[in-house]
Structure formats: C-alpha cells, structure tokens
Length: 139
Image 1 (cartoon, rainbow, N blue to C red):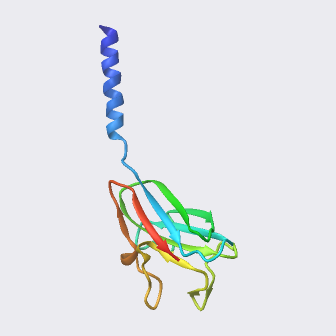
Image 2: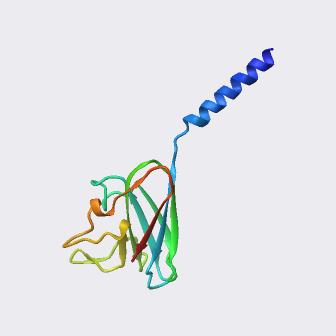
Image 3: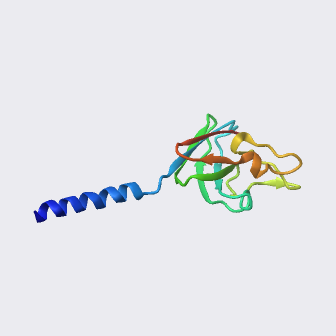
C-alpha cells in the first residue's frame, strides 16, 4: 500500500512539473542578399521600443556566406520582439557609418526600412506566441 501511494504521489508531482513549465518558442532568421563571404553577420534580438537598436536582449554572430545564412534564437518567451542585423564586413564589431548613415549592409525584421532615420520599432516588431516564428531578412 505504501508503494502504491508513493508511486501515485510521484506521478502527481511529475505531472504538475510538466504542466507548470514555461512554454517557449524559437525565432528562425533567414538572411539573404549577402554580397560577400568576408566578415560576420551580427544579429540582435530586441524586446522593447526603448531598447530597439540600443540594447540587445540576445545576439548571435555567424560567418557571412554569399548564398545566405540562418540563425535561430531558442527558448524565447511569448511577447513582442524585433530584430536588427548587419554585415560586419571588416569584423570590427561595429556598424560602420558616415554622417550617421550605415556604410555596411543592414536589415531589420519585417524588412522594415527607415525614412529619414533608422527603422522604427512599430515597423520591425513581431509577436511570438505558440509557434516558431520565421523572419526572412534581406540585406
């Protein structure tokens, strides 16, 4: 009898822990339009309007390949996000600019483009809910 009660209790505890786990998803980012195999593609994931283009929540760097690259952000909580990336052609870990205009290729989620300045959060944001999100970004 003690064994049966112990077994039942263990099953209840393990089931509760399964159902109480946070549900997370992935964001798959496909990057195309890369014009050279030189340098690194630097991808930043942002969580708020205030952090967008200022403070990266998660980042992934990958070697540039002219035929395109893919990165995946895993274990992402449901919510709003935006992506910004650039081709760091000279590997100096900085988006090169001239008069605050980027001189290296860059892109954002939803392929949002800026008008008289950088892309806006409202144009680049997307929702992560109950399934993997795929963003196709062209440099």
